[in-house]
Length: 474
Ligand code: BG6
Image 1 (cartoon, helix red, strand yellow):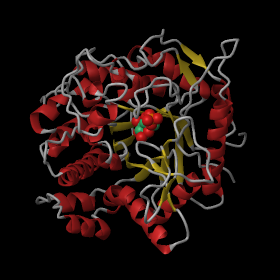
Image 2 (tube, rainbow, N blue to C red; image 1 turned 60 degrees about the horizontal axis):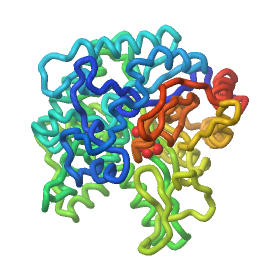
Image 3 (tube, protein in one colour; image 1 turned 90 degrees about the horizontal axis):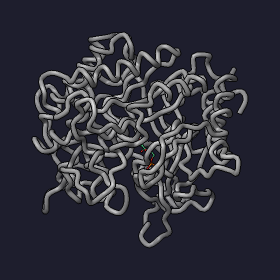
Image 4 (cartoon, protein in one colour; image 1 turned 45 degrees about the vertical axis):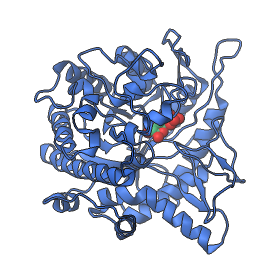
């Protein structure tokens, strides 16, 4: 009993939140480079405040982030010391195609990633690569409005083909898009979408989502052709909705809210739009821009596994107006009186992770991969300069315990677990550096001050032991 000896323990990052080096190595500007820290961040990320050039008026944390660009060897060595078997990361599209529409890739960008993958391999760490983690070249936003345009499919195809070809012998685990359902909540951040006055936002998002789905299926096809060993997955921002009460209307609302999350990965896993989404679009007067060949691509190139992020559960009510809410990953939810919340107001719900694993496995019967889970907290060094992050250990321990139950007691097939922000990085939601998730502390603050020095936290030693004992010792 217990987890398989091949279980992939590790950690997760994304280029946009850790690399920095934003104008180095021939890199072009991406949407994430234009997300300021502070008040305007959400307005820009959601496409309501248009920003296509960086200016001096704001602080853009992605420009330097934690400078993984210059520290990756040291960081990967620390991951290896913890015993990582997998490292989830993403590539920066504009390091490889600076404007997005070049015919030939930027060799310097490819060399950077090649070196990272080789470094991982040196330690026996399997890279798990997200092709697009909240990443869209600004060149393509200017040229065609980002994923508003069907043209994006061929630019993405070029990126994917380049990666699959060049890294054929180094990478076999891939994700096409991070949290594809976040296109509904963060349209600029997720897909480079900005809205004009009077534009039908729902229609624009549905079109962009369709293009991403077609691009994802195409990448899956190409990835399998180039290397039949490739394992290509979709990625969902997960977390179950609980009905506020046992009133049937509340339960129905929870079913509908859950489906809003699943709808796009339903297409990636099953190869077709689910009837409930088609009916919803029909009611809203939304048209899916199908073209010849789209249906076959979607049907014939479904994903090999389902990955997801899990931070918190949510609550649904048939009449939510005026009720108490709390924060959650990207958007708020009704308050759940049974749960405590983090310093950022996110509910802490380990059982919700077991529920998510079971529901996803029942729904798809595909292998699962937890590619994000973690606790954002402010870490304050004690008088000896050490970080005693017991709160983070508690969060991770309770979630891993439920994860193991899902595997051992419920029979869910789970390939691995990568905790989010295994090294401190900048928060996507707020742009803060001081919302930390890592086992490794990075000396950098919200104002961009600090030495970038890395330091092991208490949780570093704890996680090392968890991996060593394959989850027996929590
Ligand atoms: C996920 C994203 O939604 O949540 C990550 O894939 C993000 O990019 C993570 O960082 C945690 O959210 P936040 O806002 O605390 O950074």
